[in-house]
Amino acid sequence: MSVGLVFWLLVLLVFSPMVVPQETALWQGDGTTADLQEVIIGRCYNYIRVVNPTIGEKNCTAIWRAFRDAFIYRDPCSVTPADYQTFISLSYHSIPPNKALFWEKTKRLVHRYSDLTRRMMPLGETLIGWLGDDLAWCGRASGDGLDSVSCPTTAECEHNPVESFWRIASTTYANLSSGVIQVMLNGSVTDGAFPENSFFANFELPYLRKDEVSKVQIWVMDDIEGPDVESCGNKSVHNLQQILEQQGFQYTCTDNYRPVRILQCVDSSSHPACLCSSAAPALPLLSLQHLPALLLPMFH
Image (cartoon, rainbow, N blue to C red; front, side):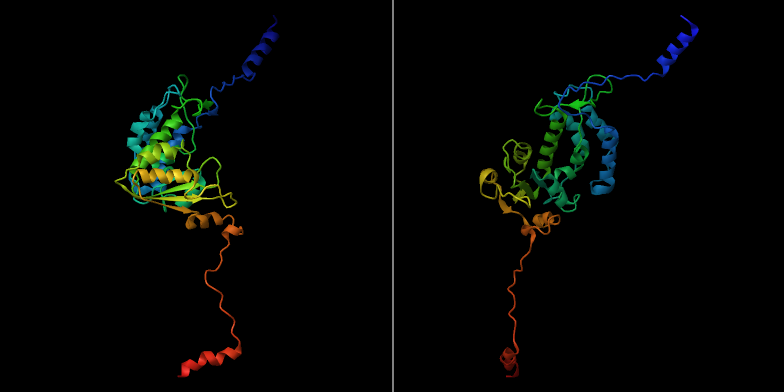
C-alpha cells in the first residue's frame, strides 16, 4: 500500500463525523427534562427569594439531592411516594388558612385567579408543587442515572417517579390545608367535573382534616363558550356534595363564581355571558309639565 493512500485513509478516519447511534425509547412518556438539576435548584431559589419569601430559608441544594435520590439509577416503575419523604420534609411549609385551592381540569384558570399566592395558594404555588410542575424525570441503571429519552406514563406503570411525586405532594398539601378551602371544577367537560379516579378524589379529599377545615366552597366554572354540562346538585358534582355531607364537612356550591367569571371575561369581554346589565331601573324622562307638581311640596 502506498504512503499516499495510507495518509488519506488516516485523514478520513480522523476527520469523518462520528455517527452516534440514537437510543431507543423504552417508554411512551417524555424523557427527563434537560438540565434538571439546574432547573430544580433555580426554581427553588426563585420561590424562596421572589415568589414567596415568607416561608423563610430552605436548603435548595439539599432539596435537589433528596429529590434526585428518590429515583436516580432506579427502575422507573418501582418508585413509590415514600421515596420522596426526605424531599417533602425539606420542602414543605405551612399553607395560610383560607388560601387552599383544589382543582380538577381548571389548572390555567386556577393559577390566573390565585395570582402567585397573592390571592390563593394552590398546590402548584407551594414550594413542593412549584419545583415539579410541568417537568418530566425518571432514572435508569446506566450512564448518568437519568433517562433523557423517555419515561413511563401511569398507564404503563403506576409507580413511576412523576406519579408518585404528585401523590405524596397532593396528600401533604391536603393535610396542611385549613379554614375555608376552595375547590374549582370544570362544568364544561364531558367526562365528569369530579371524576372518581382523579387526584382530588383519591389523594386530596380523603386527606382533608375535618377538625381543621371549617367549610368547603365548590366553584363549578363553565367555559365562556360552554357547554354547561354539569352544575351544582347534579351528576358528578352531586357525588362530591354527598361525600362531603357523609364526612361531616360544611359546604357551599356556586355555579360560575362571579369573581372567577369576571377573570374569564377579561379575554372574552364581548361574549354575551360577559355583558353586564344594569341592576337599577332606568329613570323616566321628565317633561316641563311635571315640574310644578315636583316643586310644589318644597314650598309648603
